[in-house]
Structure formats: C-alpha cells, structure tokens
Length: 153
Image: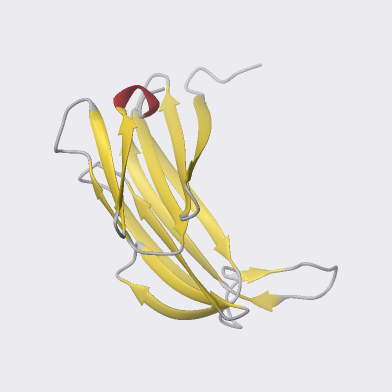
C-alpha cells in the first residue's frame, strides 16, 4: 500500500571516462511539497572540506572528490565529521566496531528534486542554466553534457 503523498525515486549512474561517476538521484512526490535529503557516508582521512557541498579526501595515497549539487535556490549542503558525542559520521564494517568518517548531505524542498553527486579524481563545476535542454558538468579538462531528459523523472 502506498501513502497518498508518497515519493518516487530513481537513481542513474553515469561513468565519466576514467575520471569518476555522476550519480543522479531523482525524487518526485505526489501531492504537497516534500523535504528531500541525500546523504553520503564517507570513509577515510579528509584533507579538506570546501564549503558545505564538497569534500576532498585521501585514502591509501589516492585523492578523491565528492561534490553535491542541486539547481534549487533552497538547496543546502552540509558536512558532518564524526565526534564522540554524536551518531553521525561513524561507520561500522564489523559488528561492535566503529570508524570515524563523515557525512556529506544535501537538502531540497519542493514537489521534486534532482541531486547530482560527483565522485571522482578532480573538482567538478556544474552549470544547468546555460541551456534549458542540458546540464553541463566540467571535470578538469572534460565537459560532460547531461541531456535534460536524464534530469527529469
């Protein structure tokens, strides 16, 4: 049985050559506005946090980047690192053991939302306002064009 104001979710994963992955999370509610949130539990040592929407972390001598984006003006992203007094930011690979990490989360309010997450080896920039039909994602010297039909549910 579905609730009358249920939410549909679809996830698409696009590989960007050998640079990384774009993850598109599509959420659409029925009825009234919803409060949407995406959360990425991240392991490892964190070299830096850029604003609330991007993290650079190092794992086994390799550097990775994780960035969140959403075109809504109400979009907000935040970073939470593990501290002893809180439950966020911890992960457990084995029963009764926990490791410090962090959570990168993004929030949007409305009848629908598309969260775009970049997981890769370089910083990315996002531009969905250049064209009504496409979203442009620039990763180092590569530009990825995401057709608008992949941006809708």
